[in-house]
Each structure stands twice: as structure tokens, then as C-alpha cells.
Amino acid sequence: MAAQRRDERFMRAALKEAQKGIGQTSPNPVVGAVLVVDDRIVAKGHHRGAGHE
Image 1 (cartoon, rainbow, N blue to C red):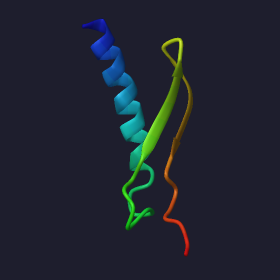
Image 2 (image 1 turned 90 degrees about the horizontal axis):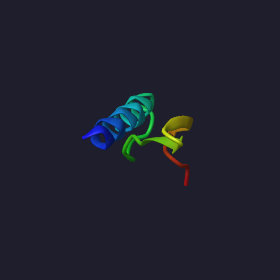
Image 3 (image 1 turned 30 degrees about the vertical axis):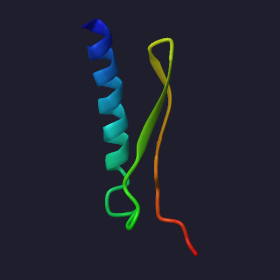
Image 4 (image 1 turned 60 degrees about the vertical axis):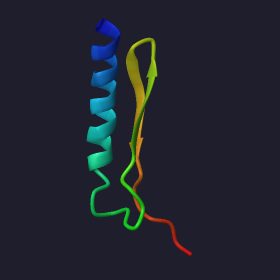
């Protein structure tokens, strides 16, 4: 069960990061990500905007 709680914590961090892109990425979805090494978040980011044609 500890692994599930750990995974949920990292998923919440990714979702929080994704929220930063709300209203900026249409028509694409908002996306957040965290990079985890040895149970520590070492990087995070989000989709900042839709691409241009």
C-alpha cells in the first residue's frame, strides 16, 4: 500500500503541474509531468500552449 500512496503523491504533483496550462492549450489537452528519481521529484513541467501551423 505504501507504493500506491507514493504513486498517488506523484500523480497529484503532475496534475497540479497540468493545471498551470488550463486555458492556454486549446484545442489540445492540458498535460503535466514529473520526473521521479529515487522517490524524489527532480523535474516537472506542463504543456504551455498549442502549436502553430
